[in-house]
Image (cartoon, rainbow, N blue to C red; front, side):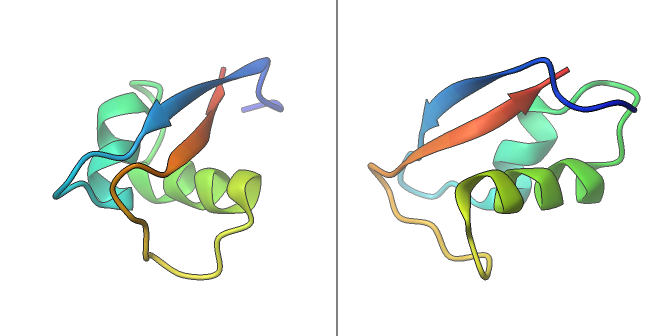
Length: 61
């Protein structure tokens, strides 16, 4: 896939994980691991830790 065409923002809810967010919002033909990695890069995350109330930018294709 090419570069994302935009981005959307989501607020992390209690109990959310990066994997769950990635699998809910990824393009249907994209591997969850690839989308998760793009979320981490876009938000400057070093690891999987996120907190409820945090706002994440998600790439949109």
